[in-house]
Length: 81
Image 1 (cartoon, helix red, strand yellow):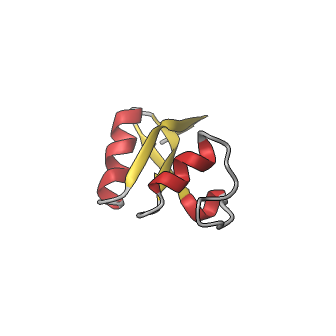
Image 2: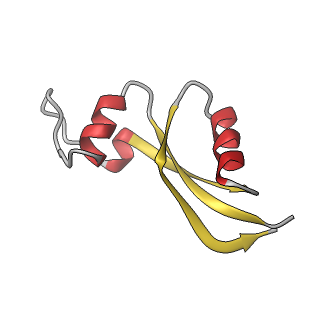
């Protein structure tokens, strides 16, 4: 069965508010004055899967306890066997 590669964004623990401020509100500094960057608030995981749900489930298992931004999941058009 052919699988696609998905890029799934995982949020660093304790950075949930900073993550959404950075990506959704386009803020570049948090209330403590700390500069926000993509790497500081989260990271992307490339995961193969037969469906987006399968890929997200695999990432949830690998990074248990961390929140995933499912709305930011991207798919690579290339097929992975």
